Length: 104
Image: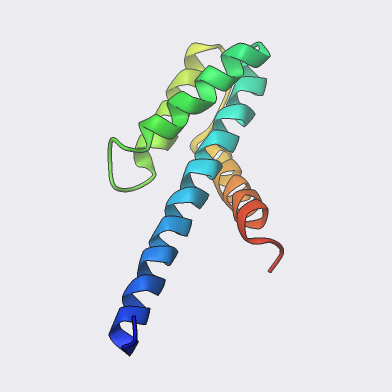
């Protein structure tokens, strides 16, 4: 890797990998957040958090995750609103970013 283009390609691949890891960690944290609200046991919470990570592969954007969380919370009898889930998503993304990249 001597050329500038090779270095840029390698950096782009690293950036994409980090973005994927941040999203996966964010979704796991979101799943744990929702599991607490639903009163799940630690084992159920772990399984549920993994299901939230997998739900993100349904669509290119975050709507699949928001839909899953809202639907699951409401089915569990937990009052939840779209804005609350989206706010939690932003908070958990910042938390995931800090845990993987350190403080900015």
